[in-house]
Each structure stands twice: as structure tokens, then as C-alpha cells.
Length: 224
Figure 1: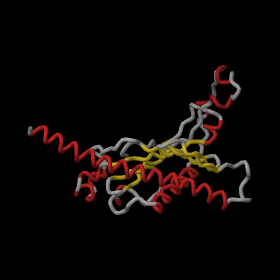
Figure 2: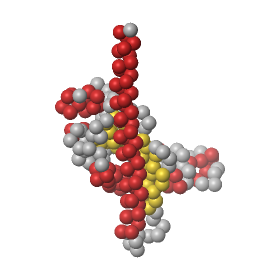
Figure 3: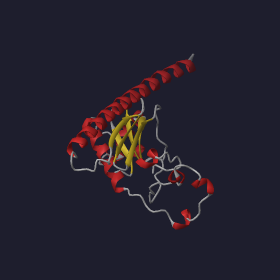
Figure 4: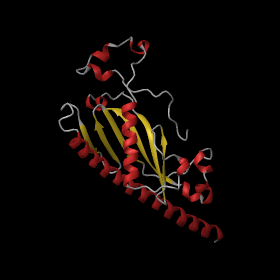
């Protein structure tokens, strides 16, 4: 019975912990959706008469765990993963005092932030590439940090000092939008586009067959 009692105790502890993490992440994601919707309306009001009418600002709820906002030629897509994660032993966040005091604090939900070109969706260019520009991690105490290339004050070094709320979410969203605008589309090397096949032209939308994407100087990888 000793093993069974240990199994049950672990099941109760971890299941309750992970459920709190999921609930916090889902609440934050819904707050993120509300904030995107509000920002959409605010941008429309503030840019009235100042922007070419062909330039779109459009928020769209893509389902329970996904949302997007298009601002001019940029598309930002936000996805919440339904699972709860711990970090690899090499991840720097595990060395923070906040986590070392209580290892359960390292269990987090994650919201991914991707940047695509809006035209990739408009013209169904399925080969076009988008980039993961940031990840928002939230734990059972509603503490959070942001990992990625966006310029935010919420790195893993401050994990435990801030709680996720509307103002911090808006700050993260503004950082993502700012990064997307600064992250310009680069002309591909001539050698990579110097040849084309008949199939690439044998379509009603010739442009849709040529892969387009922004290029990061260094690829963003997990925990790096």
C-alpha cells in the first residue's frame, strides 16, 4: 500500500498544481483576447482620417485557444498551448531564487506569439514562413515571464516579482506589435529565386507559389 499511497499523493499534488496553472493561463489568454479587441477599436479611433483606407486593422478570434490581429501588413497570431510544462534542466530560469525556493513554481502554461505577413494569408501562400517572436509563461501563482526577441522588461530574471494582469498583458502586446514593425521583410538572395518551375506559374495566383518570409538573424530556439 506504500507505493499506492505515494502514487495517489503525487497524483493529487501534481494534478491540482497543473489545473491551477492551466486555469491561470486560460484566464490570462482570455484577458489577452479582450485587450486585443480593445486595442483594435482604439487604433481605429486614433487613426481615423490619418491612414489609407486600404490599410487594415483587424482583430479576429480564431477559437478557444487562438487569436490574431492584423495591423497593416503584419499579422500577429497568439496561441495558448493546452498542456502545462516544466523546464529543461539547462534552462536559466531554474537558477532563479524564486524557483529554487519552490520547484513547483517552474510549472507553467505557455502562450506563443507568432509574426506572419498578412499577405501570406490573404493570398493563401501556404509555403510562406512565420516566426515565433515570443513566449509568455504563467505559473500557478500568476507570476510570469516573457522569452523571445521582443523588447520587454519581463525576462526570467523578474520571474516572481510581477503578476499577470491587464496592464502587463497590454505591455507585452505593444512590445510584440513594435517588434513586428521593426522586423522588416528582407529581399531573398538572388540565387534562391533565380529559377522557377512551370508549376509555379501554372496557377491563377502566380505570387502564391513563391515562398516569402521575414528572416531572423539568429533562429529563436527553446530556452535560448
